[in-house]
Image (cartoon, rainbow, N blue to C red; front, side):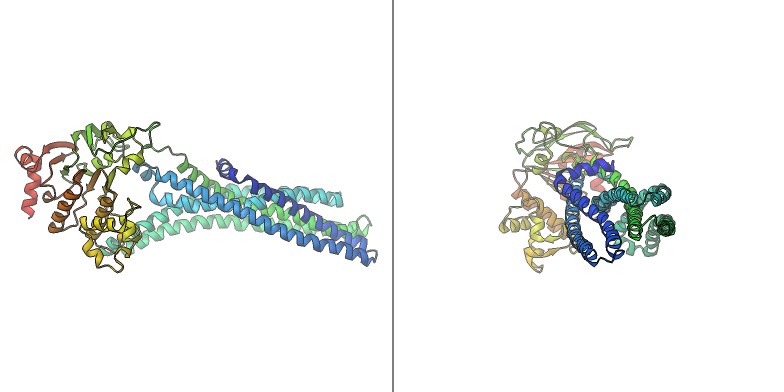
Length: 573
């Protein structure tokens, strides 16, 4: 899986990758040539007292070393360029894929896990690419070339490599077999830390309000300790494996010097050849160790690759049709005998829902908590697909429209008013990028937000923190409403978007909306009856079914569920 992933994203960069391969070959051949030049200095120069030969071969070594240094810099440049481009493309595709997910798919992975997959997991694969383009290419070439050159200098001493290399490979194999499962666990532990930490930051006020700091600290410590313990298990394996490899390397060097000294004493080998042989032996064994160090990264990168591939291989349940129909923005919404149940749930959240909205009117949706009001809204904008029945927006089934067209005709103010880090202007223009300052101000006035915006430092350039954390709940709601108004859509959907407003502001806002959006459909999900009194159509939901449809006066006379809602709020008041 990792190989297929790398091959796919490496394909656009095959030319610089080819240059890395060529330059690595040049650099490796140069490093294999250096010990032979050292042997020539000893055999042809020092042993014979010929200083000219010493200078001749010495100058070759200097120029070769300079050339190899230049080649190494260029190789590293190209390898880094390929690896960073690879990481950029991979992160971009993960982001695009996640943006196409439905709510069900987002929930199946979890926010924390998706963040980890697009950051830490991509980084693991990218690091393998950076090292792999250089070390993994040079190590086998050095190993093969070093063996050939060592045999060329002395075949008898080369027999030592027949013992040393298999021993090193055995140690590597045992180390990897233990480490690979642990690397997979590490990524899951990182997911857990991200999830806990993100939850604690988001719910910091609640944690403090209920004096749960110590409990949450213990929960984070548990997740942190789990990651530490897993990493320690891996490190223990490595602390045994690498010293063992070093011991094999050192003992091989001792063996070569021991037997080489006897061959020199018997006049069967020159001292220069022994020096070169030791260099080649070191190159051979170090190449094996370098490959091992790189291979340590492979299991973790493989685990990360599987997690990345799991995201990229998802076929979103909600996607554009093969042939999308062109849509005229009429502003109508119609439900035809719609039922819906969440994936994996046995009971339906909504069943038998049928109604129609008329452009230029307000349709209110009321009902007790958990009766399916927000779910109904989510079906309109196709955040979920119906289990049965049809949802028609602008007169066409939502399944036959492209998602961009559908969302382009809808201005949604969600139940939780979320603002982005930036300025007031940026947030209002989020749905209408070309809106002028005058249009932004007009939208703020309709949303009853202009009064408090004028008091902010910078007015339209006032800084909004992530999530609107530097504003009150009512201010966030009004800016979210202004964002929808600036878009000028054919359909407005307000999902319990007036709950944080006082009664006076609520009334002024609804009056301004009715005047400025007179040709659009307005769908309002509300808890307060005062918010929906003037709606041309009120839909009463009760346990996932429509208990009544009509005006306020009509429902008071015909719908028991509506009378109970009105009565309960009057009692509270």
